Image (cartoon, rainbow, N blue to C red; front, side, top):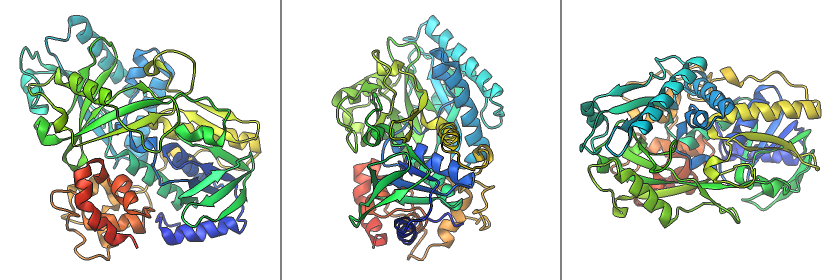
Amino acid sequence: MSAALNAARRTTELTALADGAPLDVLVIGGGITGAGVALDAASRGLQVALVEKHDLAFGTSRWSSKLVHGGLRYLATGNVGIARRSAVERGILMTRNAPHLVRAMPQLVPLLPSMGRVERALVRAGFLAGDVLRKTAGTPSSVLPGSRRISAHHVVELAPAVSRQGLDGGLLAYDGQLIDDARLVTAVARTAAQHGARILTYVAASEATGTSARLTDQRSGESFTVSARAVINAGGVWAGEIDPSLKLRPSRGTHLVFDAQALGNPTAALTVPIPGELNRFVFAMPEQLGRIYLGLTDEEAPGPIPDVPQPTSEEITFLLDTVNTALAITLEPSDVIGAYAGLRPLIDTGGGHTADVSRDHAVVESESGVISVIGGKLTEYRHMAQDVLDRAVQLRGLTAAACQTRNLPLVGAPANPGSTIPPMAGLPESLVLRYGAEAPNVIAAATCERPADPVADGIDVVRAEFEYAITHEGALSVDDILDRRTRIGLVPADRERAVAAAEEFVR
């Protein structure tokens, strides 16, 4: 089937569900986990629908550090299982599922006088352990190079804003970096659609049981009940709205956004130890659109779950103070051009700091029969999806093939069958980074005027991308285009300049 998601397909598929189309699996939640579950189920030959009350990647899945972690931090805390799984899943993404969306990112720890001998030895040992993880996961060094020590001159080349006072070189390692987390969600959801899944945004689920749910079209207000042989709750931090018996303990992770020029246009992620902590760092990471993302915090976030969490002034101060310990310049609050916060859907295991709560996931069947997948982390989304689908197949007696997703290329990967238009010369590099082998189709499918023109001066997104978001990526609103299909909206000033162009494509 086509991987294109758009309003017309949504209407057709929503009508089919309302008319009683048979369903093996109903997935509730359109973040990375829900999209992963839909793809896993559809690729096994099951009849699948995914419903999301907002847009794809509306929640936590767009507020991450855009990293595909190899699990080094979990190794440091003794959680070898998560560390090894993370390294394996990172390798699968980088070599098979999404080589177009995940690339090696250099992580640079500058060796400054504030960092003692013990701390240096711990970081070096951690990086060497990370090399072992990479090798045991089978990820080749051509994809993720090994760690090494580098000279002070090389440190300054990679991160020009680093402090030179007493700089004794640096430690360099590599991890996986997403061009964007929301783009990964969209690619997974579209690949699920390519395998026959119905992907329905702006459809809320309520009154869920093990075999049914009430669906409400948020755009028309119409409601109907659907039946399915299995109902899977992948609501993330909102999972408790579907199954109130679930106990989650959200923690907030905040990032700040800077113009890359403010830090001298670095090409490595500056990795700065948090004073008084042995295995926690803040990262200043080079990103698309000429930006730096600085993160991240880990703060308790009790109470009602907001649709869009907000950073606190204390978190902003903490991030600035920490990164400034390693800089020759001083970043001020006035240098911050955007900020965002996301809530981690941690499983409530009792007391302690949220930074120490396990990032493991769990599959839980409620008394009503709803099967929930909770906890976990973005890097492990594919493994989590396989785990909950295996459980659903077992519990509900579904007839399904074995899991296919370890070797399944997503839309945009060169091996995906949807990549049918030959490469074009002269495509913008940023377009290829965001769309991979699908980039030629973004231009070829455009019907708008001036498709290769930027949406606004100084913003590295072309008009054809806005049109493609509507015709192929399921965007239904200006917010969908600016805040999730592209990430222009992370910087309010850029959003304001691009909003008129987005409005042209929303009918």
